Image (cartoon, rainbow, N blue to C red; front, side, top):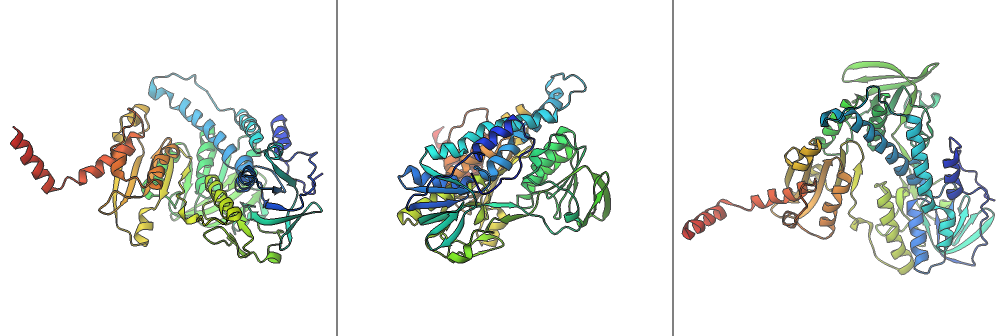
Length: 507
């Protein structure tokens, strides 16, 4: 049996029972440890799973320790459940907007929130088999469910057993943390770790934080029928993103009914018999309102407690474990990857950091995290996706840019789909076609950004994208057209004059 009781999963229906039977089986018995492991991994989220299965696939003897649920945040309380909910919200929006396409929808058509959440739980349970303890055992990894702690220079204890290692990986991730908001400790609130246990749609939902999670869930719940109040300390939403991009999403969210209270000041929370009371100032006006549920979508804390890092010389701070560019800690035998040590807290970033760890820890490789080109996306409607530098980053680094923007309002597929709010924006190093950054705002921007990421990784310039044939009509044609915009800049007055004279001579 395991020494660590995982947090409760609610509701305890057939789907969640299936989930838990895969990611933390109640009857699991930890194996007898091998005399020594090439690699011991603490943490069974994306970073840990990829580190473990990748090393085992190469023939290494590997152990993986997980105290809660295999699959980590992504499967259980992050990417998987949130995207299921977002897809349902898009379906709701499609039905509501069907009249614009000449489709009649019966009056009174509403969303069944309980069915939406049931579908999410069913899909999550089905996907959980990919990350199950049993599957990873079959792939050659010794799975230990329990709390792992470093006890010596080459030992980790879990469930009363000692595991010896040549190299170790810390992949314990991060968790939702409570920001210092007056009254927060006295009121009930949700985080991404509890939001997906809801079975009833809150009539009024408060959301604190207009980052990716806050915006995605605020828009989704508004589409389901909640009255949503989104509170953000900074101006607008998604403050990290290109301002033109975030403004398009803000307008879309407000059309969906989200009430944005940005530049929020003096936020105070208080418990009320009818829910949670929020008092906040926004743009010089005071607001005082009640919500049935409160989602706090700001603040993350690294999971460094109880690992015994001090005993093995691993340095850490409030941001997480400190690593060098090769993802090695201050203890050369111990590496880290994923949210525990990265400013890029994305599943795909954790995946590729784990691949670096395998190379460097097992084969004395010299792969560097700084070489990774990491795109990301926020799955609002429309989506925002980005890769590389923003314009403000380039300015801070003294990099001069030429920028090319193709509005979707001039792209045939976007016009036909009724999705013209958005653009493709590509930054190149001034005077060249070298792509250094790009932002896409579109209904499937997260899919489109891959082409621009590939171009950057393969050192393909914007000129090459402009010369690449795309199917017509697609949204991806907007990417090609940024290449056309670049090519037009090469038609200098000298070139134009030469062409004019040449053609005149050909008559």
